[in-house]
Amino acid sequence: MKKIFSTVLILLALSSATASVAATRPVTIEWSMSNTANVQSYQMYYSYSSDMADKLLVESCNPWVELSLNNFSMTCDNVNIETYPVYFTIAAITAEGATESYSEILTSSISIVQGFMALTPSGNAPPIAAIDYTQNGNTVDFDASASTDLDGTISEYRWNFGDGIIGTGVTVSHQFGDLSEYPVSLTVVDDKGSASLKQITIYTQTAEINARISNSLDDVEEFAENGLVSVSSSDLELTDDGNTNQIIGMRFTSISIPQGSTIVRAYIEFEADEVSTASTSIEITAEDTANALQFTNDTHNVSSRSTLNTPVAWNNITEWSAVDEKHTTSDISSLIQSIINRPDWSSGNAVAIIFNGSGGRTAESYDGEPASAPLLHIEYR
Image 1 (tube, rainbow, N blue to C red):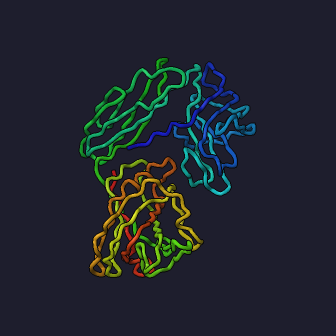
Image 2: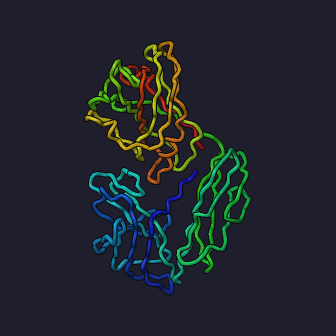
Image 3: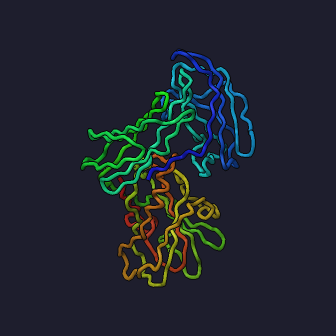
């Protein structure tokens, strides 16, 4: 399901114009952020494209101010607007390269807090189209109820399903054919006649990728007792090595899946390095970031990472009764889905998976046998 982010309150103080001509205007934005511990400053950007493509930094801005707890404001004087509509956004910046927005840790040093549309020349703020959907095979249920209009109401919802069929209404259901993808658009029109467009792609065929650990620093073991990290072990002990409990970190790179895709199935495949029959149960989670960094041998480098709060259980694992056998985890599609749904996710980024538990299964590592290192399998559409 697509995630709709609408928790930031935006207010523009933009003088109305009577024609789409160049004009200099003051712009004021108010916004809210729930966690600003790492944020050092904010910047304002604008663009003439709703996706903020080719965005430009607004100059001559006054210092941002905190109106109240977690509520902020910034005014930029003399913004040169060449045409309408014009779109603005606020970017939160930290020196460490981590920015907090919507209570989620983002990984770039400049991260978009929220994009929105400014006033049109008539003074009417156009509506903002939003699409949510659920998919079951080729049948997709669409929901536009998250669409908003800042100064009025939405009077029309027009759908184009990209296959010659159109529809209307806040919620619609559509049966697609067997083409691999369909460009779907929603146009919302407000009570004053202004409109905006939202486009997404629906995939009706499942694609898959396989990503194998390909670097010594991408499968590591951290001793739970003291946080020491081993980065060159010849095997991976999941998760007890004798009497020593471990936290296992694995980083899979080049995950070429478009942001917001639907994850149908996902698991990690291991090759047994030893016969392992002890009772074993493991909890699997993922680092809560859009692009996981490589592990290091710094103390607690695995356990200190922020993780999703919805782990997947891999309980009562079957015995690994022979060396070189292949074994797979339980389905971890929910973890991959959470990462892919992040607004700052980009196709080709890296995902880190973390294992905690008790008992023991011994798998091949990159340093032990590169061709049999852990492999992440994902099916998506």
